[in-house]
Each structure stands twice: as C-alpha cells, then as structure tokens.
Image (spheres, rainbow, N blue to C red):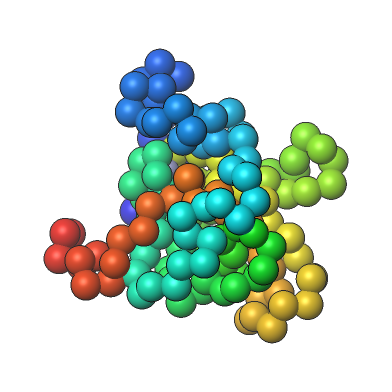
Length: 139
Ligand SMILES: [Zn+2]
C-alpha cells in the first residue's frame, strides 16, 4: 500500500488523468447527487480502490446498506483513510491517505448495527470497485 501522502501531483496532472466529475469531487471536495452513485446499491464481493491513485481503501465486507443515498462502509483498510475536521465545523472529512483525494465524510454513533457504529459516507465517483476474483491476480 502506498504510504501516507506519498502520491502528490500538481493540479494540472490530476485534471489530465481524472474525469471532470472525478476532479470536482476528489480534488475540489465536491459531492455527487444523492442516490445517483454507481455503488450506492452495489454489493458485490471485492475491494474498492481510490479512483485517483488506485490505493485499496475499503473491503466489500465492510459495506452496508445505510439507505442514505451514498455508499456506506463501517471501516476502512488499516491506514488507508485520513480524517480531518470539515470546514463546516460539524462533520469529519475523509480522504485517501495516499493521494489526499476527497472521499466523503464519516459519521459516528448513528445506531447502525455494525461493528464500529461508524458510517463512512463515500462518493461512488471517488472509488473504483475491483471484483474479488481479479483483485489478487493483478498483483
Ligand atoms: Zn488516492
């Protein structure tokens, strides 16, 4: 796994490799419209990688149906996710630890029946699913 903050690129390089929507969300901290994301109601077996740098972020086994309109995970892979106080003063932003790409926000204590009682509310645009059957073959 890429080390914390190890993938740094100038803005124009990100703009060149990301779609306009990926750039808006990953690099400019945008949010995809509720209930529109590719992975909102998607529950296949595999790994979710950062859409910006390809670092593995979440296992499908930690994904749950929160009903909130965005993909929800109760836990990131160890060291894969950084947390920062959001500029709005209320929420906690989550980013890819390797490239700093914006993923979404993490909420605690909402009462979901998960091992952590945390909800990582992640934009589908920020992640890329890799099915379990190919996730090890490509290493
Ligand atoms: Zn990344």
